[in-house]
Length: 607
Ligand code: F6R
Image (cartoon, rainbow, N blue to C red; front, side):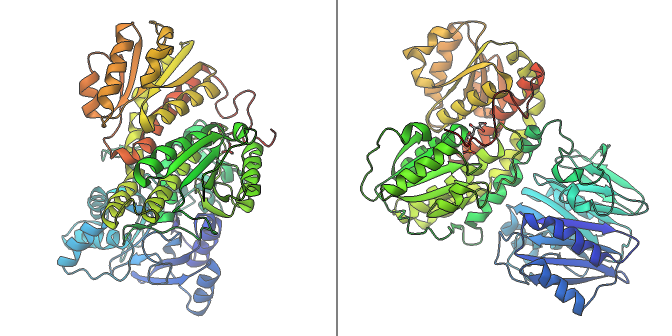
């Protein structure tokens, strides 16, 4: 992920841009850059490496403009060089971008044919050229930005500066966050409230699909449908912006909505988008071409491991065993020859997971940690680590950390598949392309919120809820039930759909909602039979499925939660969204303490 800032000010912009970028360095520091307008012309300064390098460049060649944009980069497409640093610019437009432009290759080809010359290896540069193309066709800055944004697939937050337009700055967001800071005769754009906090305490958070057209004295927000919209202004005094909920009522809701961004950030950490292949960090002696692996975690982290078990067996042909950390360490497990072990943990401090890691080390296994908190104990003690880049998770119920774990484990699956010769280069590039679609599809899945909120009202009256899933969606059903239990205090159980008739079907009656995770995949027909069994016994079906699935369950489902059609590989990531929203709104309807549910703790450092 990257940090972006934009300023329509009354004082030299460059020092203020750098000040804001310092607050955004947590989002990446591979390179940094700023652009300002001088006599209406775009002037840029960029530098590879940390912000201090950009400061040196600016000290030697200062910029005088009072209107500008800035960027600190976490490299995704293209190496962290000065040439790939943002802002990217033509003579008419400069842009800074956070996120992934999925269709950048097609756009780049189209624009190159039209005479546009590209200077970087980034996906972002197409945005500058695309907007320029529309300006060349006679459109105004606002129209050109809107036309260009409509053509971008993927997840993004952008800020755009226009040559010759000292009083215009345009921001757009889809999947990646963007905030507007409102000053006195000044206006700001930033990736978050912290970025604009040195300049103003008044902050407006843009909603998904918004485009903001700023002047020094006005903000015009257009929503995803192009209609003018109002967004609430929040006041942040002192350091309050550091940990804020934005437009959201709870941290959990905010974190659910961050997932296009957090999955994108995690995926791009492991993907070379140009070559469409996975690039993993040093594995510290872990041999991916092993005969078997064990994956260990607790709670939600364990369920991420269970999804990975399906992936690694089906895609990489690796024999995998998953276990709950507290069971694993006391059962004296036997290991296959040359096995490696994977530990999944948000906090990196969970006592049982740490003990299991130490047990594996003592038994000679190489250890690989999928961890969210850098420098945590599990991070430090493992032989190798795959960071999940979810950022701080404040809500006790894990959401964005789960999908970040799935993102890293999906990349690991492709790497293991390649190491074991189970997939060829063509299949690897197909899987990588599919993985890169995840942030956009998660953003689409979030659109089901209004429908889910209504269904949740009914769910909030239930005493028991069953969750069903098959194959890779069985762990998603388990995770759905866990989420519901922990924040709404409603008793919930997850079952493999095919297991229903072996006992749990006795629980079905008209008072027991049954939530079914059922994309229209190769196993759909089987799950459909299980849904018929529930329907025949008067059970209320809440079916989470895509349009094809919806057509087949229309006559038996009480409710359908429509989820975007997607490749089966990334479906567990996309289907995590509705189950999280369902638990969230059920808890909201019940009035429980969503962010700090009773009896729980964020980091469980006791056995
Ligand atoms: C559920 C949840 C817990 C954690 C578990 C492991 O929403 O948050 O089940 O997943 O306590 O914690 P970490 O991932 O920190 O090891």
